[in-house]
Length: 106
Image 1 (cartoon, rainbow, N blue to C red):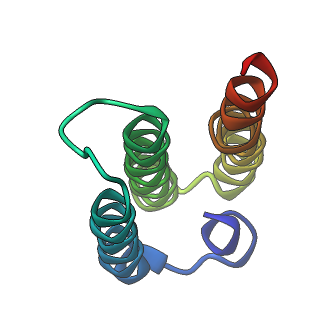
Image 2 (image 1 turned 180 degrees about the horizontal axis):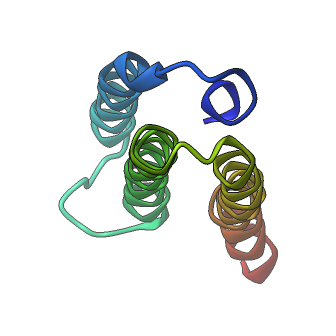
């Protein structure tokens, strides 16, 4: 998303690789746990990661649509910066603060 915001390229080809890496992490992590049928922190963090990747893909699609249909590059860059910071905040919230709060409560 950073590339699309600042450099006017279409990085949608990176999304399947990111989703493949996320799903393989889910499979490895679920196999390391003794009882993977129970929903736990690992599944929540992995689902949060998948939703973050999908939100990034939708943001890239919207940025490209604003650039191509409305030919407004400045608004597309502003929209991309705002959404980049929003998704960074969501990623930090879900991948750092959620496991840290679970660790501190035990």
